[in-house]
Amino acid sequence: MSGRSICVVGSINTDTTYTVRQLPSPGETILADTSQVSHGGKGANQAAAAAASGGSVAMVASVGDDENGTGAVHDLEVRGIDVDGIAHTPGAPTGSAVIVVSGDGENTIVVDPGANHALETAWVEQHVGRLDPGVILAQLEIPTTALVAAASAAPSATFVLNPAPMPPDASALEDLLDTVDVLVPNRTELAQLVDLPEPWTADEIDHCASVLGFDGTLVVTLGSDGAVIYAGSSRIGAVPAIDVDAIDTSGAGDAFCGGLAHRLALGEPMEDAVRRATELAGASTTHRGARLPLG
Ligand code: RIB
Image 1: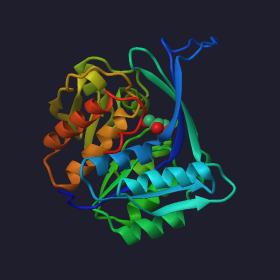
Image 2: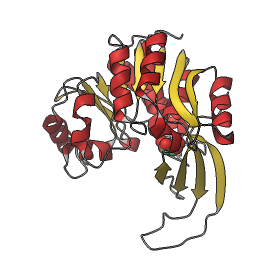
Image 3: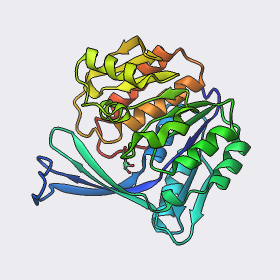
Image 4: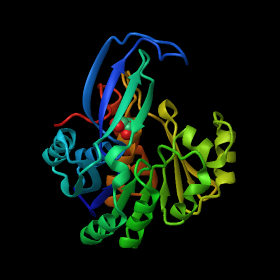
């Protein structure tokens, strides 16, 4: 059940995850209960989720010419992902992230982009052009110029953007947003896109969508409140989250985006695709680590 092919243009990181009882306050030092090093990066996690969902997936990215990069690419290869578009860039370390997960499953993440920021536009154009994907799935841990290049190298692809992490100034995304067909922010990113407080009620989310005035499909992920779908500024659907005992929500958004990209590649209607993506995201919170386990 692979459908049209999916090309993920995005980041690859090595994650160090600390499990704590409560997230630390500013200025506070706390001891972790456990720590774990694992493969991560929003791009690679989304590629892994799309492949786990049954998609035919390739990744265009940049890792350092180091052990972390070799291990990260091997993990993607084992998952059946085409890794020919991953550059091994000398002189920059593979991206890394520190994740802190609290007892109630919430998380905070700090990323050092490393080689992700060395991803070259010409490399992206060459590999996206070669792959000619049906769906491009992207995030914001790599330069936005690389993403604009990806969109122009495959103009007929459905371009899905997860705007994470948001840049300090949302206007930096103007050119990129013109190329996006499906925009998938979470509550925090939606607020940052429109420079308003985080929306908590349905009316507040509708208001943010209308201020954004995005000219495509907007899918807002709301964690345990599910997801809502807009065509332009009009709400056209809402999907509840599945009921799970979450132990680690890091990477849930990535599982959602990977699952959504695969369902769109199959040609499923948007609300069905969002429902399946929500199921995959919910299931992803029942294990530790930001990436879906193998198998
Ligand atoms: O979404 C979770 C991911 O964000 C982590 O794997 C980390 O590497 C950062 O990219």
